[in-house]
Each structure stands twice: as C-alpha cells, then as structure tokens.
Length: 480
Image (cartoon, rainbow, N blue to C red; front, side):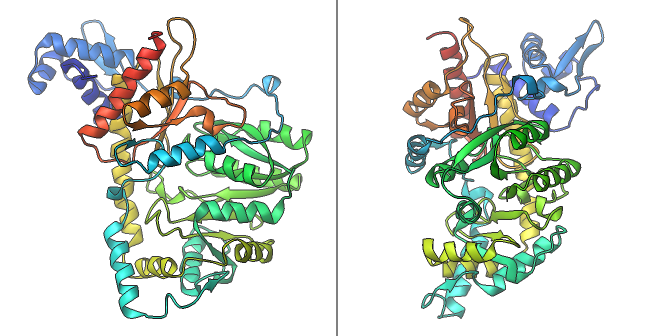
C-alpha cells in the first residue's frame, strides 16, 4: 500500500509535532508556507492537515489557522480500573505454541522482524562487544578451561554491584548471581520462592516470556489490570492479595513490556509496602531499566525494599547473544545458586568476561545516552507513521522507555474488533512478523491489540512493513 503525497506530508507534520518542533497551543505555519516548504499544492497541504486533525493532534480555528492540541487521555490505551467489574481469578498458562511460532519466525531472515523484542544490531554496542571479546581471547587463555560456578565471575559481579549502588540499591558483589539472561533469572527467582500450583500475580498485559516461565513451572497466573501510564493497578492488586493466597508478584515497573509504562516512585513505594503487608514476594524484572527516554534513570523497586528479588540483563542493550544477566536476592540467594547449578552449572564463562571487559574499557553510559536518543527519534517517527497509515481510531502507546509499541485497533464496519491472530497470519504471509495481543494474557484478552518492535533501521523495508500492516488492519475491519 503506497502512501499518497498528502499522507506523507501528514506523517511528516505528525513527526515534527511528536518531536517537539511545535508545542501544544502553538500555531502551525500557514497553508501557503507549508505548501512552499513541501513543494506541493495548497490543496495537498489542506488534505494533509485534515488527516493530522483526524488524529487529534491539531485543531483549526476559523480564520486563524491550525494549532497543536495538548496531549490528553485519548492517548491512553487503558482506562482507570473499575474494581466492581474486575474478576480476579488465577488461570493456568498455555502459551508455549504461540511463543515458539514467534521464535521460529524470528529465525527467518526474509521476515521483517517486528514481533520479537530483539533490537537490530544498529541499536546494540556490537563493535565494542566484539573488540572486548577479542581482547579477552587475546589476553587470557584461561577463560574456556573451567566453569564460572554460581555466583559467577567476581570482577563482573563487582561492577554490577557498583552500578546498582548508584541506583540507591544496597547491593554487594557477593549478593549478585550471574545468570544466562533475564529469562533465566526469572526462572531461578520463581523456583526459589514457589512450588507447582502456587499463584503468581502479574501485570496484564505482560511479557509473554514470563507467561512461558510460569507455564513451565506449573504455576497459576493472576492477571492484574495495568495502565499504560502508571503501571499495575494497586487497588486491583490489593483486592487480589485479599482474595487469593498469592505467593509472588512479578512486575516490570520500569518501561514495562508491552505498554512501556514507568511507575512513579511513590507508587513503587506503595507496591513494596503492600506486598510486605500481605507476605507476597516481589520479583522485579528491570531488563529495560537502562532504556528510559528521559535522562533520569528510574529507580528499581529494590531501592525501596532490600527484600525484592531483582532480575536484569544486558540483552536489550549490549548483546542478546551473550546471554548475560543477573539476579539479586538478600533472602533466597542460596537456593538461587543451587538451582543455577542444577539447571545449567554456570553462566557462559567467555561471555561474562567479555561483558566485564566492555564495562571497564568502554563508556557504557555514553552508549546509553546515544541509544536513548535514537529510540526517542525512532519512537516519534514510527508512532507518526502508524497514525498516518492505520485506520482512524487506532490508538498507539506512548512509552516512557524501551523499544516496543502497543497498538489497539478500533472496531470495524460490522462493530467487530480486529482479530490480531488473523492479522498475524496475514502479516506473516506478507513477510512481516508481529506479536498478537492474546500472547500477552493467559485468558486470551487483547484480541484487537498487537505489539511491534521499533528497534529497526528506518529504511524503506521497515516503513513498507508498517504501512502494509495498516492496510491489512483496514482490510480486516472492512470485512475483506
């Protein structure tokens, strides 16, 4: 589906508005000036402005032009929770088939990878990591002749502990256990505090990989409504704690996947206090913590309560392939180390040394500043492209961090909503992978939603994929 000229201009205007070139309440340049700027006719600009107005980003005032509207609650994907309508009930998880289908699609090089949350190499520190690995191999011949048994490579644990201390977390190097990525850290954390059949409270929607972990451990998931701005609903979580024997609660408070929310510090403090009162073990997934779009690094839950089990990794920043993560638990470290030994003996030896070498010899913080800026620009452009090429009424998340977007589609002509499972199949037939919304729930919610990964090169192929998705959504809503 090729965009018409006025659609591309509308896209450009939306991008400039989202990027802050025009502030809320500010008047846009006149129609004739815009026509001269884009070298098109006045009528083309008028059509473009109609599209931007349809998206709710500008409004026209008679005889005085167009003004940028202030962002309001129409941007929110989730409304405040009505507790009278919340039906909290734990459910078994059966996610394995769809997760594995998505993984297989990610292994196909011809497919545009918008489904799996894996950054393109242009967003990773590939060159620096490769140099670090080369230096490790050149300078030390003892990296491959033994296991780094839990808790892992001591110099790396020391650097991680230092970085966490900068985030107001009371962590010593002896309290850091190196894992094979964050997923492994979550497995170890849950195994250390639960047994099969136990209830685990989770955000809804939440990362489908967590659902996969819960399923593999024989646990039950209790979905708690989560808002795209403020995070997990604390009133709903309170109700869940009072109604059910919840053993653990797993949350992504900083730039949650798929909504991109970031909890305020006061809400984080309330969350840890609430969980302690009900003797529920909090498990924090902070894998996106370093990828906030602002210059201020959000504090982990661990900064508010040392009993929180903290999980993270370098997979979303430095290298997914090295599989280096870590877990911190002041009360359950011994069991975590035991399960680490039983499951995999140790985390990868060479990878641990490569990450340590990078952290010592390269500027991780400078890299983070650069990649955050890239994500800010990319998010703005992709959101604008979606708004320009998807049916009217489509809502797109406005994440505070990370690199995924949650898209909620409107109802069609027959008042039926989008079936994202059908969209997934139609998109895959076109060579595009997405993550359908039902994957992010144990109870098949979010059928009209899907998640896309925007950490891709801004090239013709990527733009074609997004525009094609918009066309496929429109076709389904029109009953075709």
